[in-house]
Image 1: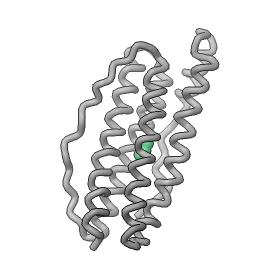
Image 2: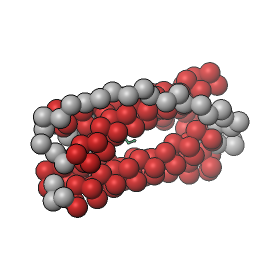
Image 3: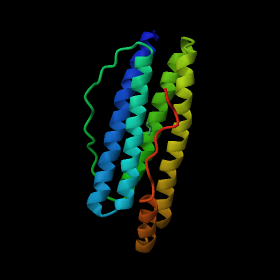
Image 4: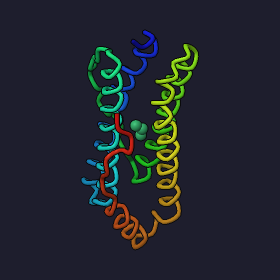
Length: 170
Ligand code: FEO
């Protein structure tokens, strides 16, 4: 069995990851409404990845004999005044999630729960990639977003993103 505090934080993370999926679906819907289907695709794929993260946390808890409690998922409540805003919000959100992962890692470390630390290693690396991707999007938009032709090309590039299952299996 896992330490109570570690198990509790892992259970909270299930909810946080599902919320991330919900948040990115909301971004995707915004871009669909704006006619930027490539941006919409990028966030739809991101939402699928977040759902996978939630499932991995859930599976890890179950593999360790812990009960999973599914709490209500918060409603994404942001409104956007420009195409750039979801990109910036996405980057900030990933930084927030990195902090959550580090907090769980810290809790696992403090009780010498090496198994959970090893499980979380994948997420530490994944967060590095997600922050980089989110930051890249912000930078690209800052560079090219104000030119209609460049925006069209960026949207076309983001339309190419396709879903692939996570490299971590439990
Ligand atoms: Fe599940 Fe985007 O972190």
